[in-house]
Length: 228
Image (tube, rainbow, N blue to C red):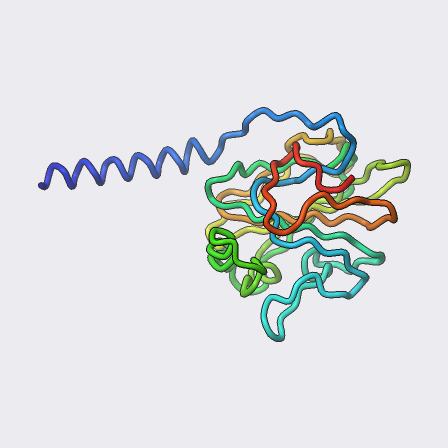
């Protein structure tokens, strides 16, 4: 009995170590599709898709608590935006990829407003497919985040896209490996979040854009076209 319990404990510890220090850091090779379009910056489940005017709510988290683009980016938005939120579970690939070929405009890290909160509400609602998946998820407005601006050409015009990496309570670091002025290829890795996280893509809205995803869809970073 004691030997069995000890073996089970060792197996559990080994499985955790394998996940935490090996499996979590996997970065499988991926190829951006030939079809033009803006790509998902992160893996897993789309939790919201919203076209918003400046100051308009992206989501209402709970009664009396809303999230605007300013809450997500920590700065005001001056034109209509499309916002796509992607939740990553601890078992997803956590490397983040560029939505388009672009030059990095800026990288800004913002500390949490209070303490970093757990993403449990979004996690279990995503697991059971309960909409809206963002209900009760205060981490959307409170947790630490890094905002990276990508400046590139899409459909004949220059646009500024923003990728917002939001850390969870258990986060050990939000990383971006490119400095302002450096070029990043469409679908190339540019950073990662260690352990649980959410990544939002914020794009200036243009007439004629086709949104290819909706809440509940699963996407792959660098491969899934989210806007055409």
